[in-house]
Image 1 (cartoon, each protein chain N blue to C red):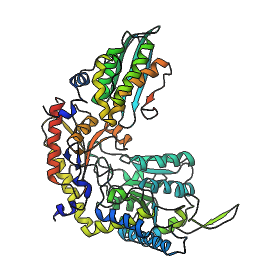
Image 2: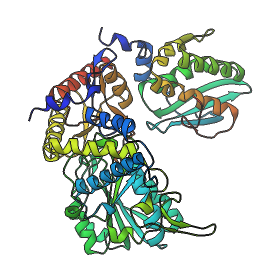
Image 3: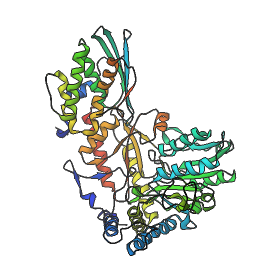
Image 4: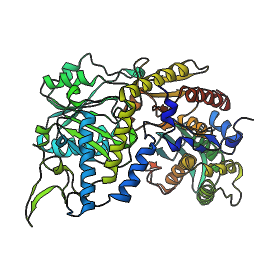
Length: 407
Length: 152
């Protein structure tokens, strides 16, 4: 596979920052966009722009067709049974909030439990905290095994017998790079009659995703972390569950009829999409899904893991103190580390001057960082357009940083 | 020299104070204290002040953070010891102006090493954290200050 060919699809990768060629290693935060996605956004606004589902005129028909085609494409992308199981959201965060608000307030009683893991992003913790405060439900956290960053599954069955109604878990940790065995986790939860939600923010667009194979009830992802525009995301929900859920927000688009005192609403998925949606975002995401599948998500996954393993090995081999987080084998293309004696923000500032875009901070994983006894880490996260040469350059720059700070 | 472009931000004085922070301990004689926290990076520090009327007789700090925030707290303790509240508040304004615009107005002494911070907008909060904590301690509010509730 010649990845340099894919690299040429991304205009921004030719940027220079601080006079240096850009090495973009912040893909877990957001990925860059290929030209086909940028072109699709432009052509939508130049030839199709109108509001959806309500116009009789031609442009509205085009916009509606584009929007619903994106929904059908997303269903195919996830191997959902039907496009009716696909709800467009602003992103993973909104998808999880939607489930917490609409499913949670309908189905949770005081004393019910929600099981999360210690490696969740804040977006898969805080919505449940808000829900718990409203409903009297309680949160449980499946432990992580220290720096190596694996879920401790030895007592999973015990965790799953404590009145748990929902088990919400990340597929791939955004700070540790851990790939969780979601098929097994969902199967074990299902056997206990527990609903499941998978946060696929870091896995969508990085590997094949099949909701029927995973066996989850809900799965959420963001378009912008997989070559799509910002502001658009997808929530998959199993149809029979979506049908039991009340609306998330009220407004136009989601109703059947409205009187001054009372309204009735549409069936899923439109019940959950009040107001004018992000139409251009959806058609842009459609282009991104086509683009990724043309490359092949299995190939992308293999390349991701190869880069992750290579970076882990090179960083582990550095002279001087470095602390690495996450699994040694079978990790995604995300590496978190700390250079001994240099704060992560200083690492990131200096690396930036050398053109290397890293993330430094708690990565919206404060409880996990607290557990690992650190305040922040530096993180390099890869996508298929990154190269081993870029990782070599990172290691070189980190060596210069150690010298600069005299550690 | 390596990283010439960074020497504006990480001046030798800053690197020195970061590695060897001054007045880095608790203060048994403290009459007030205040905490500063940057929720974006988890940096936190605590200032301890021993006030004698309007004068800061002694000052120290503890905490953890990046090179800039640590050096800023360290240099702060050195430069406000013996000053009156009014003098310190006016120094706060000078430092604030300097790290956001790069302009040094009046005599700020060694603190002038932080003028280069304004070229790194993401790091202004690191440099100003200790100063916000100091202002809070002097106002007697005693509330922890956070970089995210303050106008920077």
